[in-house]
Length: 182
Image (cartoon, rainbow, N blue to C red; front, side):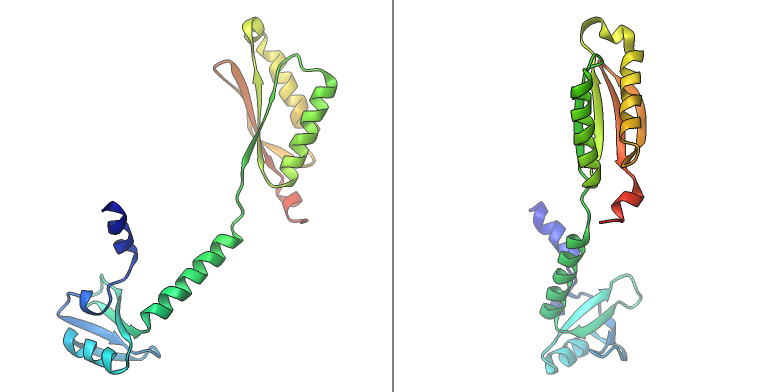
């Protein structure tokens, strides 16, 4: 039942759903026909084999337009699809390391991060401390700074290294000028 309530809020009132006694009517071509009783506005719409749609409910009196509602809904759905198609979805990719990471493993993770940043994704770099390693958190911070330095041509530090529990986390975002080259 909640789903129906949500869809009714989105949809406009059409024809007999309009409860106002008087409405301001706008013709198909945008010409104002003036304020008239709802019955007369409905009759005008039916004569033209179109719908009477309330477009401005908060106005005094409410504003209704004579239009083909089915065609209007179709055009709006096409515009929504087009807008969704043009959106860029940014994902967050995570790279995990330890403070005692070897050089080759470090470079493999740098390569992965560069690929993620080129694709326009954000990168969350996590260092996981085990056992007593947490006492030497400065080593983890140095590793993260070295990592940020290695990917600086493609990405920039969005959130500097911070400790959250037994993890140290840093966020990297793609540089804006690298995204425009695609």
